[in-house]
Image (cartoon, rainbow, N blue to C red; front, side, top):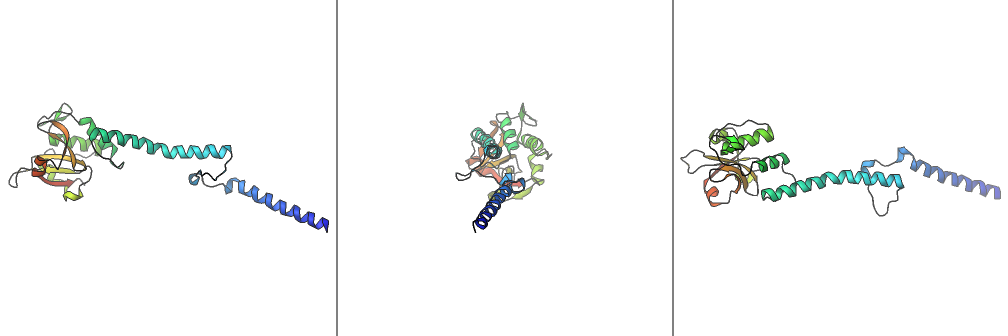
Length: 205
């Protein structure tokens, strides 16, 4: 009887040890991408280091992006939501303050269409028509309430006059353009002058 009990205990112990051995083999390790540290999880030193490394590799890019968007939010005076095109934001910022110069398209001086064509070439690799009037013929017209970052906004002084000005929409009714009275700057579609002369918005396909 005693011998039977001892054999049963040994068999049970063997079964338990076998279970723990199987749980620690590489095949049964959880996918590293699914690892998460909680107050109730116990790891050995190697597992803990690997888990912390994974957390840092996931969190760091978000922190870098947040710093970028906070910096350019201050520079451009915009409330960014971290989804805007970073190349567009950086490139536009580099042009701010460029003086107005009719017929030119460099950082020494540029007119409105020269500025827009330069931005689209540098950011998107797209060559637009050189004048604001011909540019309007190349875009898909969109409603004002559907404008997105990067779309073009056009202005004219009256229904009988042609388009005379173009800018690039950013967000929150703000657009960047080269104005005759200030060069490259950010303005609002809600300003009386631009609200009165706003004509249409267009998207480059």
